[in-house]
Amino acid sequence: GWSAPGGGHAITYIVIRESEDTYGFAVCNTGQGVGYHPSTSQFYPKTKHITSIRIPDIPKERIVEPAIWYMIFKLQTTPKSENTPEQLYEVVLPHFAGRTTLGGIYQETLEKDICGAYEPIQRSGTCYYRCVLTTVKYLSKLEGFVKSKVKRLTYVIRVAYIQQTREHLKMLMRALKEKKMIKSDSGNNNNNNNEEEKEEMVEVRGPSGGWQESDAYMIRLACSQASLCATKGIKKGMINLDQLKKTSEISKEVTDLVEELQKMHEDENEMRYSNLNKTTEYVPFEGFEFLKEETSIENLAGFEAEASPEMYINMVYPKKSIKINFDKALKYLEQLFDRCEQLRAKSSMS
Image (cartoon, rainbow, N blue to C red; front, side, top):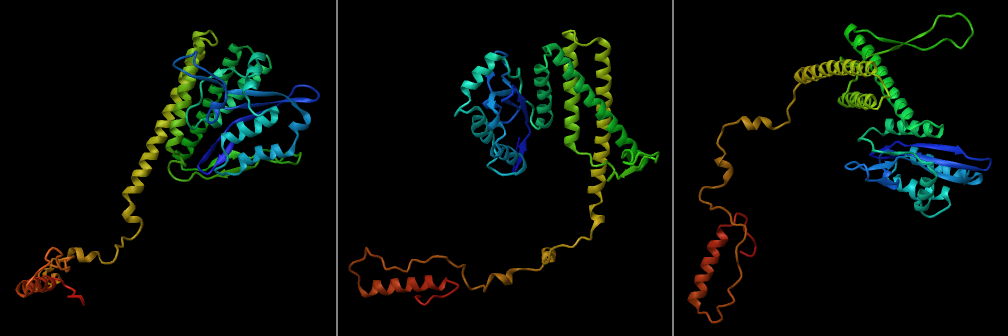
């Protein structure tokens, strides 16, 4: 995939040896950039895309060219703003295809049926999992799996993920409740002898063990999707009723563990925020003590006889008075003098 300063996207590449001198390059993408893949609206209201596309008949000298692989790995390893889907779909893939655009390639590969199937795109934030799932589907198709077997395989993968999640949650809950360390087996020693297996001590930090809100969301989503997959599977005859019940029981057990961990996480936050005044000494900013004073501030307003200052005073002689006698001129000067008196800061002009 590619990395950017604000995140990135995960996809899968597959290099397929088609003959002695030609290769294929497949891209399995379920999210950002999938707009470059062929799509269809025949499943309305859903719009599905070919999530696994393939560039066939790539000469050996082109597929092993170091410069293009440098660019591919640079997209993933250097988080820069220029790392975008356009770099892959408008530079890398056309280079492999030996063409300027991919439109003709898509038409040829769809006719040969060497691409993946039409699938709905991923939910936000699940690319790290969905790209693996669609890769398994595509590889299964290459191995000759029929569609029903591929769906059963993906169902088994979903259930396996949930089972593994259940074991991890149980281990975390047990460690949190017992206030102990989690012991994980580090494996046998490299020497071929009967030494005892070493154990690595992993500390559980905090009452919730590093649990986050996003963890709960992703696990609930996984359980929901596995249950939906099982429901569709029993309708199509891929699984039996016992397997459906087992999936439902595992999903419920996992969601119950999630709710318990969520409660511990909320209690931890409540305790943390309620004791903030005890964690550090309260030191206010300087000068705040003046807010408590009740003394009069009239002495700060200036002298009593002084009028409120005017910001602007028109000191320009009126142009409309062309002919003026001495009395009128003296009267105007008196008015101007009164105005200048209202200025707090006297100017040289006044």
